[in-house]
Length: 325
Image (cartoon, rainbow, N blue to C red; front, side):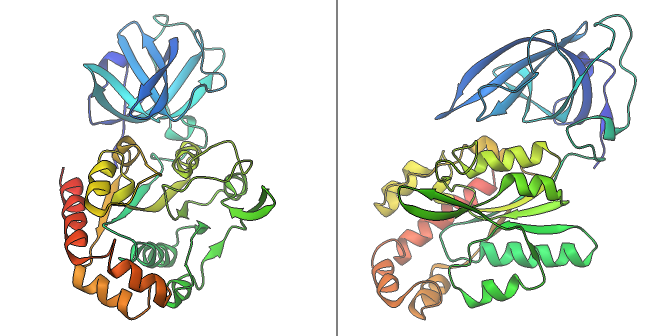
């Protein structure tokens, strides 16, 4: 992946991976979809760049007057040049804007964890539960591991499926965090432990998951993923089309089931690659009938409701349209 070092903010080109620095001129919180984003205006004597951190309302040290270097891919929003969830580094003791142009620096100087490029973000998208997203993610992880990449499992939910459990064999698993909530115990992804372990890539199943209160600073797992990426840790994750914010209402109309957990589309637009894990309605219903996905009683109920062939076909079409945008 090629990356440019911009001499000034005015030289930042849209759709180009770039490193640039400047001074924070203003900050605010913006509504984005059903969520929010922390917006920091980075400026120098050549222009301004909006830094948008999805799901955040503040970032320590990112305040007016602070010097900052950022690393990311520029795009546009409402006519302004923006970077979504860039890697960043606060810089002390530099000249103010206009005193001297920014000198190209090694990529390791930019971002919270260094590294030659922005952290990998790969998404496996499925039209419905059971199409094989988690299995595909684990198979991908085994290949990356064989290639010498440091890959760990941050959170994978096998649901007792034998093929998924077998696919985890040989992969290092970061211990989950045990949380007590309302008299019950839950296991959640331990973000702090993953950051301390500092792998090249971490596997994070079920991007739309809502965290148990008290398990960490974020309400949603997709916010945890953004934090991991900001730390320079690559993430490979899974999601079903029903959880995409722009499509959730359509899924509710197709299936009659309410979609409570929704992920902003902009999170997926940050991905380096979205890979569609395909399965025809007939194949998925066959797996359901054979009891390979759920217990017999749940399978029978699902085949007559969410997993009806016409509904699966409609969901598959939604997913194909999304990845083709």
